[in-house]
Amino acid sequence: MKNYHTHTYRCGHAIGDVDDYVQAARKAGLSELGFSDHMPHPDPRWPLSHMLSDELPGYVAAVGRARALEEARGSKGISILLGLECEWSAGLEAFYREELMGAFGVEYLLAGIHYCEIDGDFVDSFSLRSARELRAYARQVEGAVSSGLFACLAHPDVFMNGYLPWDDEAEACARDVLAACEAAKVPIEVNGNGLRKRRVPAPEGLRPPYPHVRFWELAADYDVTAIAGSDAHRPCDVGAGLEACRALAGNFGVRLAESLPIASRAPAL
Image 1 (tube, helix red, strand yellow):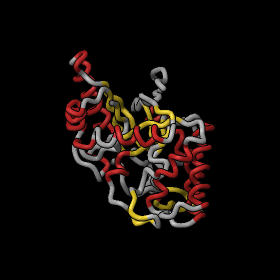
Image 2 (cartoon, one colour):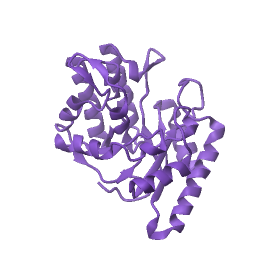
Image 3 (spheres, rainbow, N blue to C red):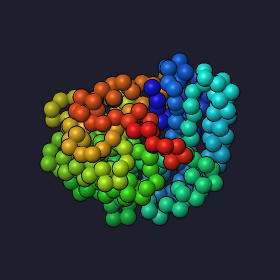
Image 4 (cartoon, rainbow, N blue to C red):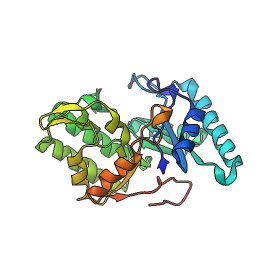
């Protein structure tokens, strides 16, 4: 098993450091572990859930040390990758390319659209309530995946956390997201953290906030690839839900990737 969605204490809502997750990944039988803590923001437009700028060098160093230790273990070691989970703004594209992936050597970026822009303000993607907000989320996704920066779209159906009914507006949003990922050839993540979250009171009854089964049923209509991610915020969750996520996508006939496509290596889809 492989997991590319892993956080550390630096994001402010997770526990444990890099070494804690590597040890847990070994126990869980993972062969590859990617760290994708929330990017530091160069300005205050997204106020919550990210590391501070002065924490980034320590994060990069911690992942580098873990990689060296695992490489020294030879065939007994697991592969370690350096990533970040990022919000999207076209104005920050140079920061992503030149600073994060250039100066700091970040190997992959996950697009995690926690905020979508409406009239210059950013609305929490976990709390969307209206058709207008759903359209804004889909636009934010389209901008991110069409940039060519991102190896994967994390929790693509996160909009169903706050938007409870599966209606025409929800389906339209889902189709826009899926069409954008199909056009950009960006994989979509089946997110294990959503399965661990408290159920939400939808019209059809209590359900996970995401992944949403109707979203994944629709995904089968598109030429998209899925990848399972645990979205671990505790070391014990580093492998949690991966098999369930793979099963969910597989049940609807969505093609699964074994590995995340990383620019520094040939895609393994």
